[in-house]
Each structure stands twice: as structure tokens, then as C-alpha cells.
Amino acid sequence: MKNFGSGGDVLYVGIAKESLNSRDIKTHFNSKRTGSSTLRRSLGAILKDDFKLKALPRSINKTEQDIYCYKFDVNGEDQLTKWMKNNLLVGYCVTENANYLKLREIEEDVIKILKPTLDLDRRTRHLNIHYLELDRLRKICQAEARRN
Image 1 (cartoon, rainbow, N blue to C red):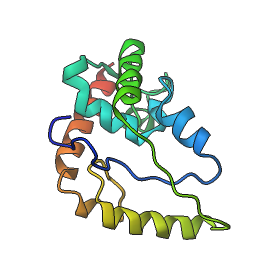
Image 2 (cartoon, one colour):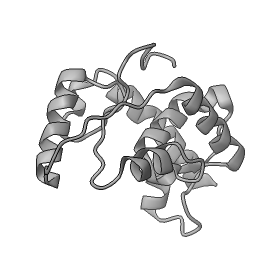
Image 3 (cartoon, rainbow, N blue to C red):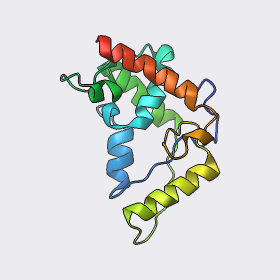
């Protein structure tokens, strides 16, 4: 995956307030949810040339947020989902009775330790040696979404 990781590397760390099923399976691994998934947008930006992905605004409104949270055309979304299912593993940790603020603290600590290569979290992005390149690739997709 270009220079963003190899087998066994942690690519992304996130939290689920309520359900791992809805957060990970129904959002990150769903062809219709790129506009809601920073993981999908980052992977799509990295794999854009390989899969010839076409970036689009996430809704017909074409607001700045719709462009920032771009998606890909239907064929590209399906290719991305297939690649993710064939190449990624999902791991999780369950914490008992942790409120959202505590989960955010835990998430930040885990990111600091594991340094996931797709991390763009404002709190920890400076630890990711790839964040400038990832930002650049995502901006290419945003510019294309603006044109479409």
C-alpha cells in the first residue's frame, strides 16, 4: 500500500461509542459509507491511482463538508470494500463502563504507542511520519470531488 504500511502494521485506531458492528462493519467496511469514514477516505486516496477511483462529493448538496468528506463512484466504492475485506484485519479492546471522554484518552494513548500510519487525529497526527503525504493525497480527492 505504497509507503503507508505492510503486513502486521496498525493502520488506524478509532473508538466506537456504542457498537463496533455499526462503527466498523456498517461504516468502515460498507461501500455506501465512505463519506462517513475517514479510514475509507484515506485508503481510497492512497489506492486512487491503482483502482482508478473517481472522487465525488458525499451528497448532491456539494457543501464544503460534502467535498471534504468525499466518496467514490459506485464501482470504486465496491473495489475499495473488496480490497479492505481481503487485506485488513480488525482488532478491538473492550473497556467496561468507560465514558466517552475516558475512551478518547485511551484512544490517544493507544495511538501514541502504536503510531498508526493512517492517523490524522488532531491530537496525535504530528506523531505520524506519513500525515503530510496522506493530507496531500486526500486533498487531490477533495479537489476532484469539487470538480464533479
